[in-house]
Image 1: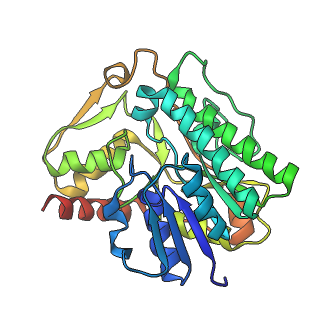
Image 2 (image 1 turned 180 degrees about the vertical axis):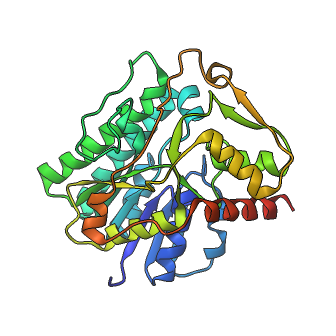
Amino acid sequence: MERKTILITGGAGFIGSHLTDLLLSQNHRVLIIDDLSTGQESNISQHFGNPDFQFARASIMNEVVLDRLASEADIIVHLAAAVGVRLIVEQPVHTIETNIGGTEQVLKAALRYRCKVIIASTSEVYGKGSKIPFSEEDDVLLGATSKNRWAYAASKMVDEFLGLAYHGQYGLNVLIVRFFNTVGPRQTGRYGMVLPRFVKQALNNEPLTVYGDGTQSRCFCNVFDVIKGLTSLIEHEDAGGRTYNLGSTDEISIAELAQRVILKTNSKSTILNVPYENVYTADFEDMQRRVPDTGRLNSLVGWSPAISLDETIAQVVDYERKRQS
């Protein structure tokens, strides 16, 4: 792909910082806007001084800063969002306003300057659906609006509707990417992300806290595979107007993941099951399974994940050990 200027919202975060590394290595110019509410400056500080890199510490709700950056961009990768189950449950107003309002600001700016937009969405939008694997055109079943758990899913669905509406009504080149449990170095366990939390507990020989009975399963995809999938969509000229699942299809229960982490760290940790109501709320509802159908993305760009879960765990362990040393 020819050299582009790419604006990443939330670019100091877990996925955004890795995407920044890759795009700069490919000779693109990268602009970042991030208020560091969940991102970390240390994730991107290695690029300070690079003339092809620019970082604005600001919220995407800051219209002046966002407009200035968008005016220079060819492509906007919109990753900024309120994320993590704990944050969603504890701060539903922040979640809804940040996700919907932020995406609205990004799309308005993109329309002014005709930027291509990639909007990050989530497997959460599949809600309580039981048809496995999840396909992009499946019907969606969410829980009651009285349960904060589903506020995040609903807000990201509105993001998707809004993005596709800009594509349909204004001809803006917009596409949606639904992430399925991306994991790897730099991910924080602060807001409920399970793998870094397990690894930190195992390295400290503390009990690994498995929420619920541990039979719930997920498909974990390495961030280095994910950013390759993202860049393939950035490069593709005819991906707009559609939604794409992006994740691994290898399923593992949370209980088995805990055992795997203990094994990989040679930890003396045990496993402690904790009821959901002790962590979140008494009426908390979880998704039992999340398995994506990634056929659409594979057909379009030939993408499939290449890094195993064991290798991913080893990367996270190495990262956390270095952080603790």
